[in-house]
Length: 316
Image 1 (cartoon, rainbow, N blue to C red):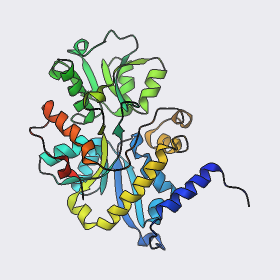
Image 2 (cartoon, rainbow, N blue to C red):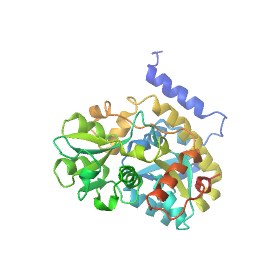
Image 3 (cartoon, helix red, strand yellow):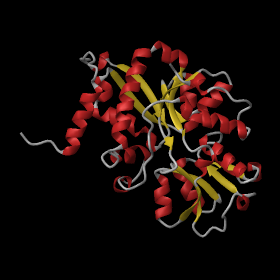
Image 4 (cartoon, rainbow, N blue to C red):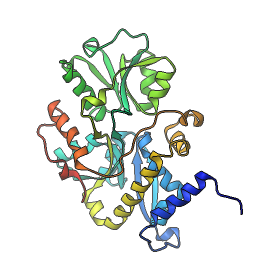
């Protein structure tokens, strides 16, 4: 028998771990519980894609399908019921809660770590802009107005003694932000992994500031969530989803090259380039203490009227 490659052996061990404790075998696709997931084209979705590819979800009795959408469309899909679980900026769930919408977080995705920042404020390499003050009156791109990038920009301006209203925030998709900066359609833009590497390594742009760090040293950037009524009605399936996702996240965090093809396909990167770009860090466990800093930053920057305990939006 031909010896298994290291990658194949690791994948096999991964599947064995996912089956502890043992679950009843599902004999056909008709027996699987469907979960429809939607996400914007970002790196954090890779653990879900990996669990789909390896059959880990199917082994846990789940038929998981992942759809690519913009952040706003994901929220609308979960709200309307066409999407069961969404992956969005944690800000969307915070704002929904403030409006009485019963979204609950079921699992973490990208976590901000200052050692490996997932997002930066980029400008053209020959740009004269060096500070928040220099950007007064200028156009700054964020992927979605009212999301985590806007919280970061507002926090950064505030820390530098500037009013964010002195600048113009423009909504441009994640993949289109770097070209918009390079073409001069905006003077700065929030670059998110994996697009930071391409923009900076090409010499076309430089990092003006690691703006996400203005929110807090550590916080959850994006999360998986659903309507509380759906989550409660499908408790066993959602718990299985959480368990598989946690194991998959641990695996992907230490097998970035092996999973780069999934990133390339979903985000639209060249496969060879996807092997070398800087990748995000995915949290393995959900902790309200990683959500609270975002709530507090939104209050400081007047995106939220009053604070609340992050545990109120964690599904138990």
